[in-house]
Amino acid sequence: MENFEFSVPTNLVFGKEAHKKIGSLVKEYGAKKVLLHYGSGSVKKSGVYDDVVKSLQDAGLEYCELGGVKPNPRLALVYEGIALAINEGVDFVLAVGGGSAIDSAKGIAVGALEETDIWDHYQYKKEVTKILPVGVILTIPAAGSETSTSSVVTDEANERKDSMEGQLLRPVLSIINPELFFTLPKNQIANGVADMMSHIFERYFTNTKSTDLTDALAEATLKVIMKNAPIAYENPQDYNAWAQLGHSGSMAHTGILGLGRSQEWSCHPIEHELSASYDVAHGAGLAAITPAWMEYVYKSNVPMFTQFAANVMGVEGSFRDPDAFILEGIRKLRAFFNSLGLPATLSQMGIGEDKLELMAKRATGEAFGKERPLGNIKPLYWQDVLNIFKMIK
Image (cartoon, rainbow, N blue to C red):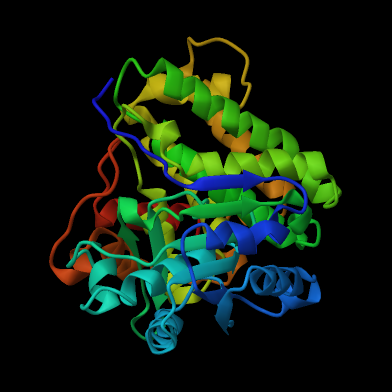
């Protein structure tokens, strides 16, 4: 087990009607003017917008707003939000939505105080040293950005999707009311499940030994997600199923499931290229890539993948044929994703072969003259990424 430091300063408020307390909770951070940041008109149709505005007003808080966040949040909107926050003298950024709204809000909160171009932070050219406090009302459990140290945005003009990392990026306040998930369409439910599971897989698969506790925590969380996802998928108004999924999604990306171990983080940067070039849903891309990645690398750590097949996917049989045992686990994972209507191939997402090599080179940095292999189980160079793409074309 490896050394680690861990701190989660986010105040997580969970339960029915919790979002209606947002005004008084935000006021505890000394805020006077809030930037309300959200996506499409769904927050207004659902009544959440009205609840939030009323709560802010009742608490005596001023606010301005910026909507229009899209899946795979756009850098252009972050720039617009930064200008608005500075001009309006905002001192708190409140995201109402899922991972896209939260990640965009984080970018705005950093850019409003940092003097350098915000894209430099997403390119790891500049460390985050200042940020406005960020609060969250979660409406889509998936990305885990409500408790995470990261933000991902897309530079649409240049087909680049990159992340910004840092402890300061954890929101100071996150509200999870499972009732707000009741109206989610099935494709968003499925994409969210794949995303939160991938956050766990990226931490779970490791070459570090003697990580029994984090192994068990990760395995339990994956099984809770896989148990409750079909329930919410078939009955989107099942509060208890959503409560389990909302809690699991947040825990998946706090970092607690990766303590004391090397981590993988190969499927995410590979998928980012699909989102950047084709604007596919992040979870959908991960659902296709993850099983293929497993098939490509499992022989580099057979014990780890045998453990996954047995403890997570419930494979039974003889350990004397580990290849068959592991491949059955991967098959069952792919079948689970397929049962939620998630894609298994690039063609199902409308992706052809014309950009596969370019995306592979971008994923590892080869396209920019600074290749760094992805992952730890088996370090992946651009040719490896291309092979994975071809496995699912």
